[in-house]
Length: 315
Image (cartoon, rainbow, N blue to C red; front, side, top):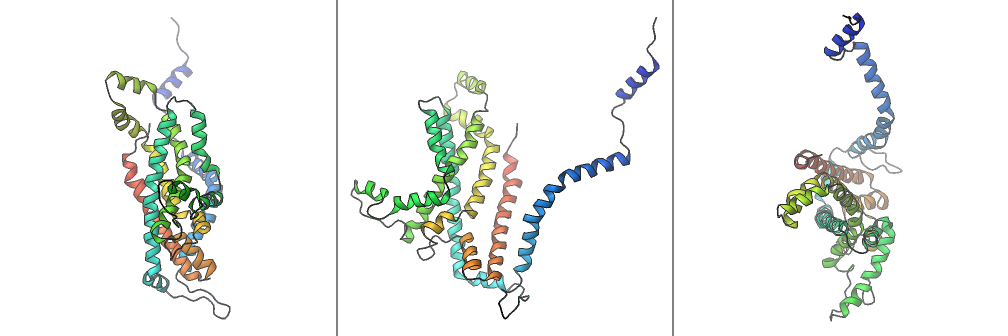
């Protein structure tokens, strides 16, 4: 009868007892190593994000410096002047309408395009390329393309409508149609970008689920509502975050197409910040507007990740 060495029995007992407890020195050295690995990212994030935000918040309580008058502390006066300005509320309303118009439309169109080109249809590769092409174009180029579409009388849109007896329309020159025309350009530009994420997510859904649903007699709509849409929830949350950010930061095409007109009908918050800070050189008012923009984005982000993320389930 043979006996196992004492070392083997000791090792077995140690493994059965679980992992050895780390000493305080080991835990401290591991924490230091982790923080050292994170240090470059933390420094960059603080330098280019958090420190500028804090500096902007501090500047919003000071007046605009002039050549013969230094900046001085004015408290909440910049915010009081901002709230009392009717243009501020008009711009906030325009931005809200712009966000409500672009976010659901771009996401719905992206999902519809992804579902369409995910099926085995002729020319699927060409359709994917056609849907994605607007995304790779610079926003300035997109704005100039749509300027031709919206040009009164001889623009592409008016030429098509003339076939149905509709006269020339100044799409960008009327307050009733200018903001809608700007929203259309944004949706056309963003939908292809969001489609790529939905298409990638659709291709990760196991085909066995569709086969099982077909055996059970589930319709395409039932399969989409009960299987596909819940599985796309993480992608939808990601796309929604990007769509909201784009709704408050995209201003290039507005500068090219309308400059915020007519009569501030297409003026949005970021454009107002730009004009206040760099056209009228009112630094105090511009920083106050910037803090409002940051507060709006922070509130929306908090709502998404605290409330909306509860309905998101990751595999």
